[in-house]
Image (cartoon, rainbow, N blue to C red; front, side):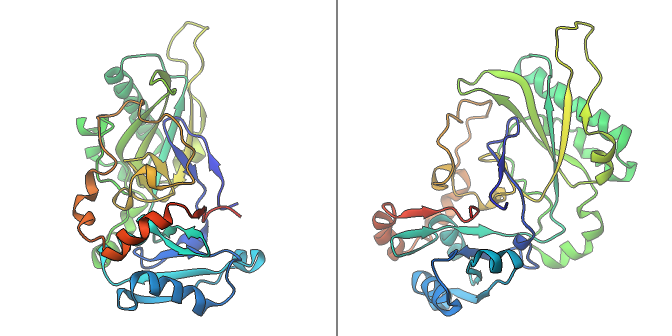
Length: 320
């Protein structure tokens, strides 16, 4: 199921990544009209009317076995400018009182690893971050091929939960990306440590460590229980679960939904559950920090339709 959301410690949402989201051009967006529309031309026309024909570099119907089975109409769109693409991600398109959100894509080289750890000792934030980092580094040294470990993974910068502009191994420079393709899915570097807290902001000994890159040898050899870190039998055994992901957002802590640079602020993803999230360990970041330049690109037509769109039914593009 493409819309499956799993719970991981410290992660707001984790989605399975369907293969139809892969694209050679990672700037492509997908609009899933589901079975509300039948004709390709109608879907493209709705998008063109919303953003302007001149703003679209190319568009077509995306074909996939799942779409045929569920009778979905999914339109693949490449916008001519980054500002219009940003606007499309933020507002989507509307048709018959329904709002259809854009789906981001990535190429098949884009990879990251999520180490979810449970049963860690209860410690203060700095100590907990260091403990999680050291445990992951020990696993990497033991089970990851030496060539896959980046020396920068041990830097102190990787200890924090900062809003670093990390986005898996996605690279917007296609030529450079081609040259680095052999390393894109193998070089491992710790980017973020997301400690898990309850809705009152209290740490509970769990968390997820995010690394750029992925190697299958880790999951094959080190997925499950870890050695006990204390002789006290009342303490739980630590366990680590490793997942291969394609993208992450360090702003709203999601996996496989969108990359950090495509984040529009958690409040704009209307199909997310409204939970107390801001109480977790963080550095006081704002989800809108990276959006200032893009706000200038919002057109007058966008401003005039925002009020109307607010009352539309938001269609979750990942749900059947």
